Length: 272
Image (cartoon, rainbow, N blue to C red; front, side):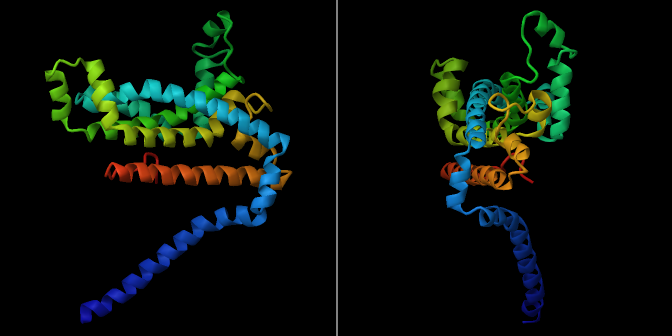
């Protein structure tokens, strides 16, 4: 009885902390939708600025996601099966953008691909100028979002019973066929979750895009950049922010459903 009585203060304290954290997270989100009700938000999203930024975002994130999935999935499979120190080093390097400040990512991309960058002059000779172009938006998105898909894909591939993959090889399937016909279908939910997280991260990218691609309406101005550019017309900025909040919430719920469907307990990459 004495121990049970002593647990009440702890339970009340934890409950108060939980409520405080929920309020801290929800208050800014609720404030967006209180300031601009759904009807007004839809009207604001019909503005030329919002529609143009949304079109740029959808185009660039779709291209970035295709690059991430097509290039990142086979690499994740190889890294998930490797147990060498070299694989650990490679994994650490490709995950580095997860912890880089956005401004550092943007400056690094300029240092690599800008006119005076490591490869910039060579690319310019070939007639390729990447900075402040729509291609630069895609590159910035791939750079910051790739680790999200890579980590989820590696976790999904590692959850596959090695005996299943070994049986495929024993039955005569080569590495490529085993990857396409066995590994990818078995890891499909985890791969989809990683792709969704990568797409959401690309959609919300701001700092690296601003420094490497600029903010040119109809070319490189994505939704996050348009929010910053429309702070003077605050309701329009809030409407675009509300749209991104809704998309982010939908992606998060979808990822949890996908991971729940495969019975996994993976931690969402990049989550605090």
